[in-house]
Length: 112
Image: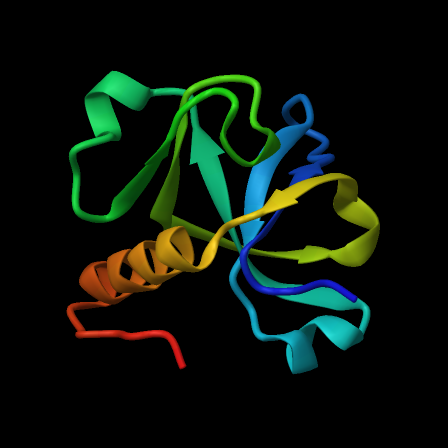
């Protein structure tokens, strides 16, 4: 079962395996597609203070480098592009991520 807030390495053809965060709800993750994922960037210093980015430090949630989840970098990917499962966000960081997605859309989002 693929759940919101889980972090995987994704195997994109145009770049090396890259950490992504699942943001689609469980019901949508049961088919052949993971409907929505956020891709991360290593441009930590530059982007970590932006309200639409969620910073992660190396060692958090199975990540080996500092990076940010960019809410404007929303992708749909096939399940087969998911590689290694790292870890899942805790409840606090999940809430921060959902709020950042809302900020990117100009909405006040809260997780259910």
